[in-house]
Image (cartoon, rainbow, N blue to C red):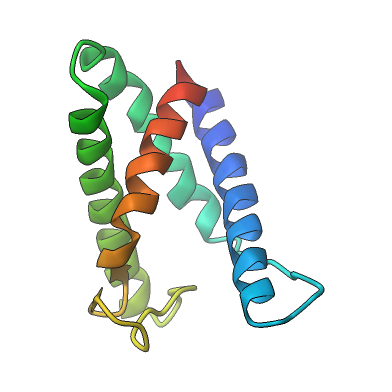
Length: 125
């Protein structure tokens, strides 16, 4: 589990830097500078929990598995976001975007988290 935690944390960092770099490109920032926070490593590392869950759900359709992962990722994002926000340490703020909840989750990211969960499942299998 420790190795999976490290793998998921590092992979999450890389995906976030890529994702924020793409957003920079969308804002005509041609350097495509991506960014993350050290605080994100343990949050992404929690995706290691997908491994044991996926082994129990291997006969369940990908639609249901992806939906469960999406809900789990939303729950983790909400929980960690509210905790970090309480201490004024939350590295993300969605308050100025549509479909946010308390500035810590974006409901329009549901497809992103759906496929991210299935991607982590593949990496951890």
